[in-house]
Amino acid sequence: MDEPRPTSNKSEDNDVHLHPSKGNTVKKKVILAVITAGALALTLGACSSTRTTTGSTSTSNKGALVGIAMPTQTSERWIKDGAAIKKDLEALGYKTDLEYANNDIPTQVQQIEAMITKKAKVLVIASIDGTALSSQLDEAAAAGIKVVAYDRLINGNKNVDYYTTFDNYKVGVQQATSLLTGLGILDASGAETGKKGPFNVELFAGSPDDNNATFFYNGAMDTLKKYLDNGTLVVKSGQTDFKTVATLRWDPATAQARMENLLAKSYSSGAKVQGVLSPYDGLSIGIISALTSAGYAKNALPIITGQDAEVGSVKSIIAGEQYSTVYKDTRKLGKEAVSIVDDLLNGKQPTVNDTKSYNNGKKIVPAFLLQSVVVTKDNYKQVLVDGGYYTEADLQ
Ligand code: GAL
Image (cartoon, rainbow, N blue to C red; front, side, top):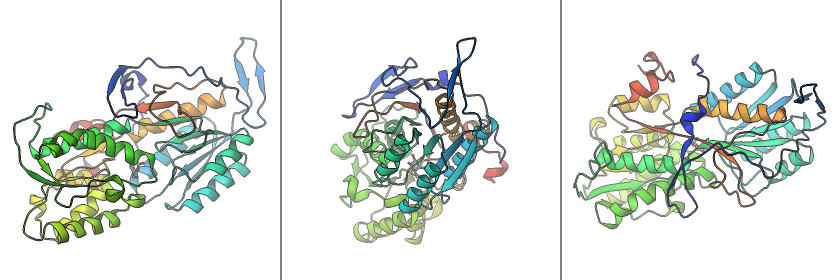
């Protein structure tokens, strides 16, 4: 699909919620903070810098190679992300090496090694396992290559220069809030309706090696806690611990198998599941399969959440099966990554709007966070179609 590419309007995205590790929400109008620390002593390989007569710095990075390491093509979103970044970088005159790793860690490691060997000047990495790339990051730093973590933070290594993503804690809050709205516990304005249930819900989380999965789950659980504590929500399986509900590699089949298991163990007496917290559309598809195989009618499924606004799941929302998804505009994320790369290759300091939330164990990685939007049957047209992400025909 040929997507319209609106010029990025950063001011739209600057009203971010910062979430210090304890999970308390500090709403802050963030002024585009400029990272002063670690001044941008750009070595960038063998690149030479010269002062022009106007005093600006011109570099020899025109035509530089940028490595783009994406996790998998099994999810449509990464295909869109990779293609958008490649196209936009090439439009700026850079060469690109776009690789997908089939969700296989050794493949991604080897692809990044190859990018370093080919003398890429910047690596844009959406990691599979956020802790598995340390020696490649050390090699990159030694060669003067900059690293931009794309949507997923790379942990345990100081050589992550920048990070661009969405406000992941807030994504979790949005997922949980839409579960509560779908169940009728909250109304559309977010106010409590007084409905007390109890409602049977089951919880799913993403891949434990993906830093985002914990952010999503923490955001969701901080929102659901009150209703779990006061008995409005009941998790009949008793499974609420992140490790137990996590889904390795975000695999739909794993989620399907777990849902089948939950139905067999905790709902065989005839009780029904009324809500499922799902952090990603792919998992929601697996969860829906398990439910329909167990006899749930397609028009009487529980309230099921999601993320990524993947085309199949938006169709499912329109058909009244999945209840909601969290839409993250990958065009904007791609543009943000490209702008960071371009700044790095031009000796400029990239703009960030968060210098608190993303501690990777070795440093707080300066980040640019974008905002996500909850999409349901009620607003998909306005958000996704009018916003140019999909055409009506895509969703038929
Ligand atoms: C996460 C990402 C989500 C979803 C998931 C599965 O890292 O933030 O948007 O795409 O991976 O691919």
